[in-house]
Length: 193
Image 1 (cartoon, rainbow, N blue to C red):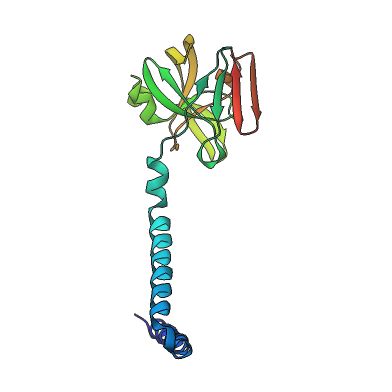
Image 2: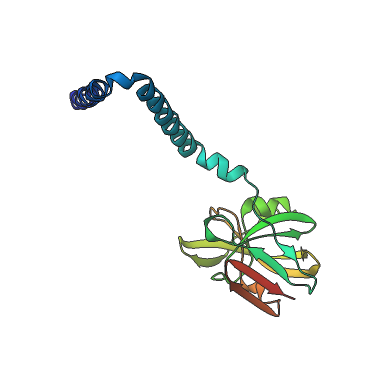
């Protein structure tokens, strides 16, 4: 610990002692009530610290809201964490969670998701390029035998596998344009087949 840190720690300690002493002197006839209030504030403080420290764990264990299918056949997707829309499609009968990206041209798979659906990125040459918000990445054009989203199923769908790091696979307009309409309003995305 440096001398600056020790000095800051001493300053905070003296400040707390002065404020605490003043509170004790002012409320000496109500020490029971003061102790009770201090305990309550201490527990609130510990709870806030615990919630902040565990927020990432809490956020990842709370299940995302899933798409629902209306009687009319529409696919209704509520806005998810971070303001994004998420869809789980079955690619070659394997569930893959996508972030809907209306700014992306194609369906773009992460290396991990490509492996999960039976593609071998180690055999890919990654000769194509794509421009992303994080710069240019190398990609490989692939075909996916079957893609299903609830009752909607397609065969021989074009996609890309990105060689770059991705937080998850992206579902771009190349796939979304298969729907008659895509509407986003009031925190809900509706896909009409």
